[in-house]
Length: 335
Image (tube, rainbow, N blue to C red; front, side, top):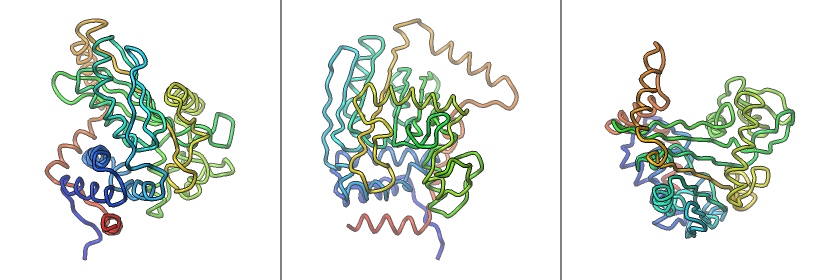
């Protein structure tokens, strides 16, 4: 018997939905999370795909996430959208408010949406890409449980806090930049730990603040900020945007996205959306000229090209996952 299982994207969707619903997630919420998981697998971002699903299932079962939560969306100002995720999944909360953000941006030229009492939102680029597909220039700030120490410190205060931007392109899929404040996303360290594999040097520190290649030790320590103090400062900025504006928990007050202890993490997200026509006509053409100038240099590529190549390949070839993971997921789906 092979150690792997091949799945089409339709299989991924069906399995994800069954796992979530069997674990206590409402159908409407499961649909939002499923779309994100499928998109992650399609783009080759497996750490936020099926590999993350057992944690989602456990957190619904133990009450760390309210699988039946109904997000509450309000419009306190013409250009402001506020969402209370009610300790449920971030995905359905974002989905519920996305139409309001789009309409507010088109009406005001620029609009912001914040989400509080939230949870891991998966691949941040997935959310801003959908906004860019509506013709908007979109920017996202997302905070998470403490994982990065302030510069000079040893104890985690900020999450690995990703920032993402998506720019619309008339001739195809939006350009998406999605990166964490750390050298690497913590989810990648978790995948290495699950496989019992070492991590590359420079990714993380152990609990004593010493560099480590031991994934398990890294999970007990802190992640290395990208660019040293600049990465730590970026994480602080994102904490202010994602948690400070929304009223969510700062990273040092949020429970882990990994373990079952601590109750709902209550983290936050902040999205900015710009209607490019409100400021200066010709954004698309000017952006394409910039992209072309970049690609004139030998050896360059635009951000997201590998992700889009994986998307094209996966649509026909599907994905392959470890049989042990597949068996675990089928166990959750069986209740």
